Image 1 (cartoon, rainbow, N blue to C red):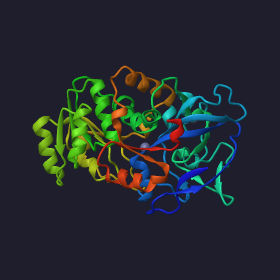
Image 2: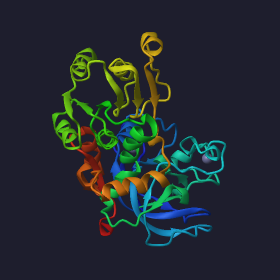
Image 3: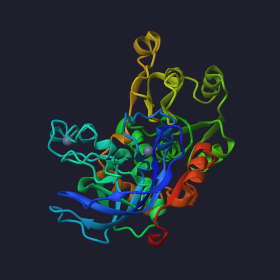
Image 4: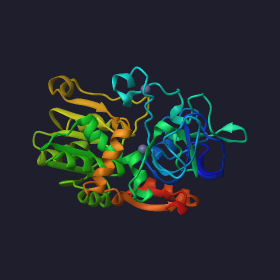
Length: 374
Ligand SMILES: [Zn+2]
Ligand SMILES: [Zn+2]
């Protein structure tokens, strides 16, 4: 099969021929129809998102497609079923899962997020060496072999280019609002960064009934998008966080109730966002940070201001619960998915697709991996 493979950090993925194994017990072979390119894929290339020594790797973790074959033990999916490949794969029986805390599942093998299967082996290779898959998905390839529990079957007859976005950007954005922050009606919300995830945080805040939704970005085109997705106020991000804080306090004089960082990569942004929240306000780190990054929080904010800081990984959700809800919101016109797509590319144009995703001038970049399925 053909896939966009990243062989070295700080280079562009290239389309290569990869060897593929049959799905084993509990696994499913999916023909990828479409895949989004997420900021985290770009962060991997730049060495910001940690992947250790898991190279070469197939990027892409926002995929949807069609079941091609099922491995032994998979009885509830069949060839031709339309599926979304989700980021989480709660095992259902570890210490966390058994207490209902699926987002923190620790029952998967250590390198599951790079494609390690439950038996400790990999399904993709080149020249006899494993090829890893980002988030255990690698949706920028024609096929992916994934655990059954990473799949959500979709009955809705919607375009794959839109459906694929639910697996990361939409689940992460809405999950940050609903599962993590639990934004309340009438609240004031600050969203830093208006890419795919940021736009979904804005949509989620709107659905939750937030009164003020303040979008911040350094790109005027993305602020126009933010307004279309439900932001009540849009601010072109100044260089100096103090200037931004002054702007925010003109809109929410006591500070906002919730601040979301949808960009990541810069841990120093988090304390500056905390300073823009009200007493007892909550700041949520949504964008990817490095494992070794440190966040320095002032005692004034933490203790005397009772300001809170937390992080959310992939929306802290349970895909089997979240994705059907997301699709219901989409189907009833309360959630925009089609409008999130900024540009589409074919797999062969992967370099241009990443270049576009890097510039981030518009909504999500989507790769039409198998056009015949679209
Ligand atoms: Zn992502
Ligand atoms: Zn588990």
